[in-house]
Length: 123
Image 1 (tube, helix red, strand yellow):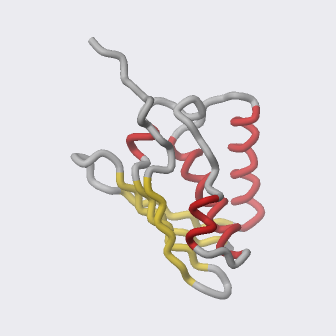
Image 2 (cartoon, rainbow, N blue to C red; image 1 turned 180 degrees about the vertical axis):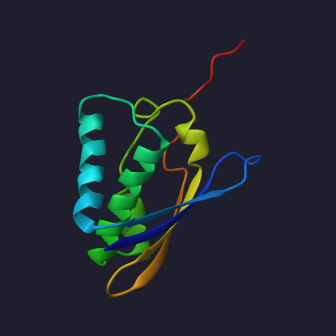
């Protein structure tokens, strides 16, 4: 069983929100594989799909015994071209609380999708 609580912080004027992933392992990783498939086919992913991809990566890394620094370096590299409008701004920081059979850990990810070159259309 997969149990992850993700607290997401976006724009400074928006309140944080929480998403809980509490799935059977097979269903969880099948869903994450569907997101990876969309990216391979150059389809843009939404906020829930991006969150699922990061969550799956963090769970695999925690189970593999990786340290937080290793997890940060190996994060999936999404760009603004991989995601729908608004995703980089909404996912400014994610705190994952991962509970496995052996341990419970917290992993913080800041600015997972760089948005420095991302400019909204001007009026």
